[in-house]
Image (cartoon, rainbow, N blue to C red; front, side, top):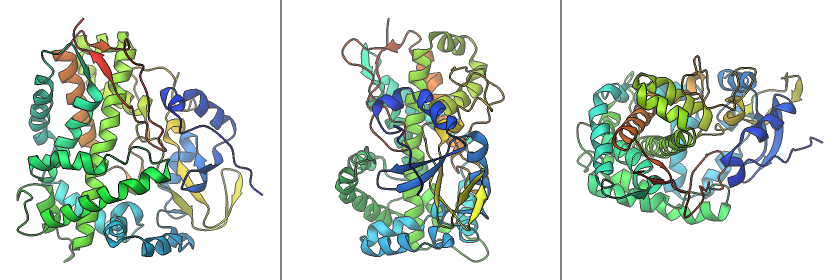
Length: 406
């Protein structure tokens, strides 16, 4: 019988400073078996090498559990409302050749909107949000900037009407505690509303803007194939979730790191050319996505000096991989000049994050506009302490209170 380990990877205390726990996990070996909420028994890859190998070896590890002999997911999907089950039809849950087909269609649509061309729009949105704070000495950046910037950017990129942005926040607001099955169930009605709305706006003649990403996805064609209506809605939902939530936590966690390391913030202000390496270090140090989607062993095998069986479930624990001293010098240190910085925050292999350039651009704009407009900004811990949410796989601040002026 395989013994599962009981490491705390959900609590606010862990999220506040995950490095000691990650160190203890790696001390157990490259893979650690844990029983995770909702997910169940999972082998977590906790070294950089094991994590990278897991994500690149698509012959030994499948994303679709059916390719590892399991029909559990298909049985579960049959019992879910159709508006929920269709969300599984995006590229993240598939292996090649289906993944290649879906990824190719999405890549084609993305090529029409370069991130470089979007930077003025991102800056304009950031400045509009910061204008509202101009006369206020204290604000919660999480509520008034870190969430709203990526939300507004991805909605604009998709081509959703601006008046609908607040509805998205309300509909998906319940998905803040994915470790709590009750919270997930309570969030389902909001998810259903989003799916129905996306189905409506994405149809030909819907309210989505014609020169944006939804229209490009609808029109994309490769080898005579296009996205079905269900695939289109599923892909939009994926892009919205991935483009909004993960970037929110990159920006908020990165700002907290900068505000908690005065020397690094001052250096960024005096040397703006360090912004690219600053963003990469925030991606590594914060690791906003702490755990990858699961993979499943496609065969019985000996891997990382352990015996595994077909169907065993694995995930890359990015927090541990990104703080592996075998790959990073002094990994507990936040250093905006760190180079090279081979973090795995965007994954690797064929499932490498589609929106990596957009996330980098949004974080760079967010940091630059804030430190430029409010050079004396500092954390405000006088009324409340910095709190993290109890989440599985996402490092999420509850709030980020700051004083904008000295």
